[in-house]
Length: 107
Image (tube, rainbow, N blue to C red; front, top):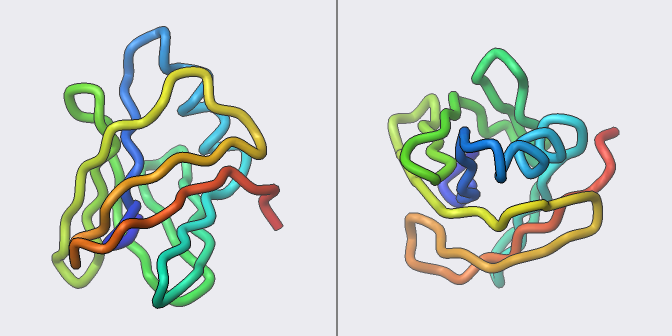
């Protein structure tokens, strides 16, 4: 979603990961590092936005969730199977920082 997410998640289109993708679409993803915390909302149309003005597109590629920011930064990260509201995991953002991802309520 984001440099991290973004995002940094890692979604996959495989059936065993369908619940994780559903959870990320139904809820929101909090991204937390030592320097920043923000929330990302993934949309079914392949776009995402955040509460800090970061936006772009996302897609599942080879078992990873890949994001491309509107600014051009990209990131792909693997995601756990069977994720649901409240679950957390760690990843790395494009700056090399460790980030914690947590599925939180949308809104």
